[in-house]
Length: 508
View (spheres, rainbow, N blue to C red):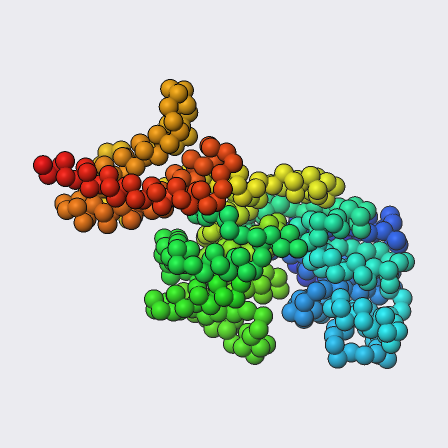
């Protein structure tokens, strides 16, 4: 009898979709072939129903093998969600949390859901032992905390499930733990079939030169806070929100508490419905804040490191990545929080303020997970560097700035093209900046009635000035940060002088 027929004839039937049933067939085929001492990794995008699939695996495995199952998670919220799902599939299970010291009643249960650290401590202290375990399922398998427990289940079949089969620690690749990888439906396919919402991604260029990389391989909280809590970045966030997420239920991800609190204050001061949430909030506070977020139509929730997993709120309409990350997993997890579909929600907005889409590609682009699984080092080395990403920035003047220069026919300036032309003519490279200053001065004078107005307009060009200086220093090659900063200040001084000269010539 096929797996599909088995499901349809089940007394405690749960509806699974065709793509889920197909993956179940593959997993059980592998399980029946190897049974013990084999590790299988299963990949399925966030929102694809991994918990539903492995809950059905647990139900069928217990029924057919008469052995027990252990499900490992890394967060308390995931323990509770997993236990509830298993119960819905008719699996009698028990959560092993910090309150559980022994299991005198373990014969009453066929499945145990445990936090990794809790179970590790109980097993090491030899105060707890689970008998007759044949299958261990590892949720969010890309986390490396699970490795410390695998030695306790050497005669079991190991099934890891994850949306991103790339280890959270580059020094401990998943291919060293898992013998095989099974790939589920990809994001684009799930969107086309109506199971996931489509992401409309809007990227804003952000200079990340001040960010530092920590021991975990990602940007440090301290350097992220320094960048994202400054006035310029807060204004960019506010502008991006107003442009693409206004009046939409919005979830903002930050890398530091300082940044998140600054974001909260900015939106609160402007009169927006906004709350802040981080891991220092008590369980009761978190419950109250999430209840508010769920029931407030145009709510903004700014958060830190707490809602990337174990959080499911389908009414989210916009995601803002107010941070940069080097973690492919985190990138997918953050965007995935907005991907749930509803009858009235087929798409959602994503605002990227960390060059993340340029680093990893768009969220729904097909990914060769088998290649990443087999050659993780090669994949990580192939990711574009921040310098390379920023070198290819193309500055676009914001609409409200463009309006201020509407009297001018030509606002463009191709720094690289002009640089090449200057070299071809044998002229000094700084001629590029001289020409740029003259063009900017012309824009200001053409669109102002007074000298004061012209000089005020120059301030609206500061973002473009920074962009042009950055492009110029890339073309020069090995320039120090101090030299680039000096060039920018020198440019602004020369611009002020050029505006004065042009304006006096205009009124003469």
